[in-house]
Length: 140
Image 1 (cartoon, rainbow, N blue to C red):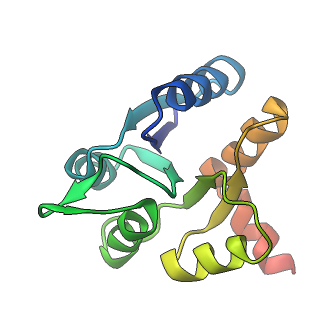
Image 2: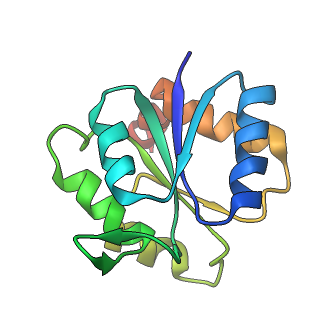
Protein backbone atom coordinates (compact mmCIF):
# COMPACT_ATOMS: atom_id res chain seq x y z
CA UNK A 1 0.00 0.00 0.00
CA UNK A 2 1.38 3.41 -0.97
CA UNK A 3 2.03 5.96 1.77
CA UNK A 4 1.09 9.63 1.57
CA UNK A 5 2.74 12.00 4.03
CA UNK A 6 0.44 14.91 4.90
CA UNK A 7 2.05 17.98 6.45
CA UNK A 8 -0.88 19.97 7.82
CA UNK A 9 -1.35 22.11 10.94
CA UNK A 10 -5.15 22.02 11.00
CA UNK A 11 -6.28 18.78 12.70
CA UNK A 12 -9.66 18.89 10.95
CA UNK A 13 -8.08 19.21 7.49
CA UNK A 14 -5.65 16.43 8.35
CA UNK A 15 -8.50 14.16 9.43
CA UNK A 16 -10.59 14.98 6.32
CA UNK A 17 -7.67 14.46 3.88
CA UNK A 18 -6.65 11.24 5.66
CA UNK A 19 -10.17 9.83 5.58
CA UNK A 20 -10.66 10.67 1.89
CA UNK A 21 -7.32 9.14 0.88
CA UNK A 22 -7.67 5.99 2.99
CA UNK A 23 -11.38 5.28 2.38
CA UNK A 24 -11.71 6.39 -1.25
CA UNK A 25 -8.12 5.99 -2.37
CA UNK A 26 -6.95 2.92 -0.47
CA UNK A 27 -3.79 4.77 0.51
CA UNK A 28 -1.82 4.68 3.74
CA UNK A 29 -1.52 8.12 5.38
CA UNK A 30 0.96 9.56 7.85
CA UNK A 31 0.16 13.05 9.12
CA UNK A 32 2.38 15.47 11.02
CA UNK A 33 3.50 19.07 11.13
CA UNK A 34 6.65 18.23 13.12
CA UNK A 35 9.49 19.03 10.72
CA UNK A 36 11.91 16.49 12.20
CA UNK A 37 9.25 13.79 11.78
CA UNK A 38 8.51 14.96 8.21
CA UNK A 39 12.19 14.63 7.30
CA UNK A 40 12.54 11.27 9.08
CA UNK A 41 9.47 9.77 7.37
CA UNK A 42 10.51 11.16 3.97
CA UNK A 43 14.04 9.77 4.42
CA UNK A 44 12.67 6.33 5.39
CA UNK A 45 11.73 5.55 1.79
CA UNK A 46 8.06 4.69 2.48
CA UNK A 47 6.64 7.99 1.24
CA UNK A 48 5.30 8.07 -2.33
CA UNK A 49 4.01 11.66 -2.19
CA UNK A 50 4.00 14.55 0.29
CA UNK A 51 0.95 16.80 0.59
CA UNK A 52 2.33 20.04 2.03
CA UNK A 53 0.26 22.81 3.60
CA UNK A 54 1.87 26.15 2.71
CA UNK A 55 0.95 27.97 5.93
CA UNK A 56 2.06 26.10 9.04
CA UNK A 57 1.64 27.71 12.45
CA UNK A 58 3.51 25.25 14.67
CA UNK A 59 6.40 23.98 12.56
CA UNK A 60 10.00 24.66 13.56
CA UNK A 61 13.33 23.62 12.11
CA UNK A 62 16.54 24.25 14.06
CA UNK A 63 14.54 26.45 16.43
CA UNK A 64 13.18 28.70 13.65
CA UNK A 65 9.55 28.81 12.48
CA UNK A 66 9.16 27.41 8.97
CA UNK A 67 6.34 27.14 6.45
CA UNK A 68 5.54 24.52 3.86
CA UNK A 69 7.62 26.35 1.25
CA UNK A 70 10.75 26.02 3.41
CA UNK A 71 10.09 22.37 4.28
CA UNK A 72 9.61 21.61 0.57
CA UNK A 73 12.93 23.32 -0.16
CA UNK A 74 14.59 21.10 2.47
CA UNK A 75 13.07 17.96 0.91
CA UNK A 76 14.07 19.00 -2.62
CA UNK A 77 17.64 19.86 -1.53
CA UNK A 78 18.18 16.40 -0.01
CA UNK A 79 19.39 13.76 -2.52
CA UNK A 80 17.43 11.05 -0.65
CA UNK A 81 14.09 12.89 -0.82
CA UNK A 82 14.60 15.02 -3.93
CA UNK A 83 12.52 12.76 -6.19
CA UNK A 84 9.52 12.41 -3.86
CA UNK A 85 6.71 14.48 -5.40
CA UNK A 86 5.59 17.32 -3.14
CA UNK A 87 2.13 18.76 -3.73
CA UNK A 88 1.34 22.05 -2.05
CA UNK A 89 -2.13 22.20 -0.52
CA UNK A 90 -3.25 25.71 0.30
CA UNK A 91 -6.16 28.08 0.62
CA UNK A 92 -4.03 30.67 -1.21
CA UNK A 93 -5.82 30.83 -4.55
CA UNK A 94 -5.19 34.35 -5.74
CA UNK A 95 -3.91 34.86 -9.26
CA UNK A 96 -0.18 34.28 -9.35
CA UNK A 97 -0.06 32.31 -6.06
CA UNK A 98 0.25 28.94 -7.78
CA UNK A 99 3.23 29.90 -9.96
CA UNK A 100 4.86 31.89 -7.16
CA UNK A 101 4.62 29.08 -4.60
CA UNK A 102 5.72 26.40 -7.08
CA UNK A 103 8.74 28.48 -8.12
CA UNK A 104 9.71 29.36 -4.55
CA UNK A 105 9.36 25.85 -3.18
CA UNK A 106 10.35 23.57 -6.05
CA UNK A 107 7.14 21.59 -5.43
CA UNK A 108 5.69 19.34 -8.11
CA UNK A 109 2.00 20.19 -7.80
CA UNK A 110 -0.59 22.50 -6.29
CA UNK A 111 -4.07 21.80 -4.92
CA UNK A 112 -6.34 24.49 -3.48
CA UNK A 113 -8.38 24.08 -0.30
CA UNK A 114 -11.09 23.39 0.45
CA UNK A 115 -11.32 20.07 -1.36
CA UNK A 116 -14.63 20.21 -3.21
CA UNK A 117 -14.43 17.13 -5.45
CA UNK A 118 -13.14 14.21 -3.38
CA UNK A 119 -12.84 11.85 -6.36
CA UNK A 120 -10.76 14.39 -8.27
CA UNK A 121 -8.56 14.90 -5.19
CA UNK A 122 -7.93 11.15 -4.89
CA UNK A 123 -7.26 10.89 -8.63
CA UNK A 124 -4.75 13.73 -8.51
CA UNK A 125 -2.91 12.35 -5.47
CA UNK A 126 -2.83 8.87 -7.02
CA UNK A 127 -1.34 10.33 -10.23
CA UNK A 128 1.61 11.50 -8.11
CA UNK A 129 1.84 8.15 -6.31
CA UNK A 130 2.00 6.26 -9.62
CA UNK A 131 4.29 8.72 -11.41
CA UNK A 132 1.65 9.48 -14.08
CA UNK A 133 2.02 13.22 -13.42
CA UNK A 134 5.56 13.07 -14.87
CA UNK A 135 4.23 11.57 -18.07
CA UNK A 136 1.71 14.40 -18.37
CA UNK A 137 4.53 16.96 -18.04
CA UNK A 138 6.55 15.24 -20.74
CA UNK A 139 3.57 15.29 -23.12
CA UNK A 140 3.14 19.08 -22.85
